[in-house]
Image 1 (tube, helix red, strand yellow):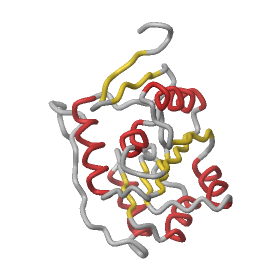
Image 2 (image 1 turned 45 degrees about the horizontal axis):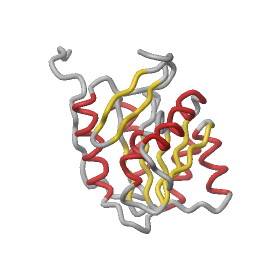
Image 3 (image 1 turned 90 degrees about the horizontal axis):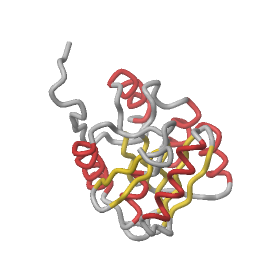
Image 4 (image 1 turned 30 degrees about the vertical axis):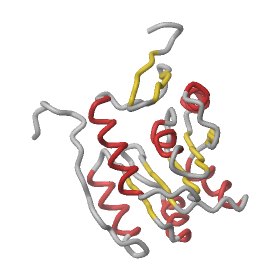
Length: 182
C-alpha cells in the first residue's frame, strides 16, 4: 500500500482503492461477476446507464465502453473520489460520479430529466430502500441488473420489482470460494 491506497487490475482496467472504499475481495471472481452483469444487460451504444451503489466505479467503468453515458452514485465520498480518479486512470470520459445517498441522489438525478434505460444495483446487505425501488418501478427500464450479497434482501426487493420487471435469470457467482457453508 503506497500513498494510503492500493491498486488492483480487473480485466483491462486499473483501480485505485482507498481504505474507506468498498472493493470485492476476490478479483478473479469479481471479474467474472462484472462480465456476467455486462453480458446480461445487453448494452447498446445509445444506452444511458446508472450504477447505483457504485463504490470506486468498477461496474460503471466496465459498462462505459459499450454505452453513451454512465452515472454512478455512492454515499462514501472517498469512494467517489477514487471512482473519479479511476475514470481518469482508465481514460473514461462518458462517466459521471455523484456523492450521495442513493435514495435521494438517484431521485434528484431523475428529477433533472436524466432518463436511464439500464440500471445496475449492487446495494449493501440491507438491500434497496423503498424510494429507490419506487423509482426503478416508475422507470420501466430496458434492463435492471441486481447484484446482491444477501439472498434475503434480494428476494424481498425482487417481490416488488417483479410487478414491473420479468426476472429472466438468477446466476450465483461464488466470490468466497473454499469457505464453509452453514
